[in-house]
Image (cartoon, rainbow, N blue to C red; front, side):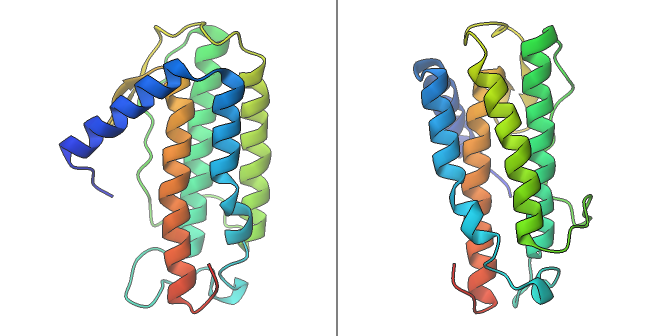
Length: 177
């Protein structure tokens, strides 16, 4: 995925403005709600086709799910680090990689891992005051330096992007998305 500069600036403006405006419960609800299609999409590609590239090329459902889980965990660890110790980790990569880290058998297995980790993060966020350590920033390759609230909202954008990708893969395999 490449993001043209104007689009990257538009997304960055959204992340900064909404992360500052919304309360933590509102942010958490928005993230949970917009990630909810992942539960259904976990079963949209049959297990026997889960590692196959879709007709016409592109990443397999396994590669996309692995990327979702990996990036979500990296961002969660960074947010937790910023909240707990004011430590800014290195830049967070959200580039999709053809290799898979988790090697799970199917979408439901990935979704369980994703959801468990996501809920851990959201529970931690809901214990925050909301204004702590906002001066600690971590760079994103396209959206610049982001604080923990902005990274939290980034997860929403990331989920929505890959929900679309999973729907496309399911459709190309003739499944319902």
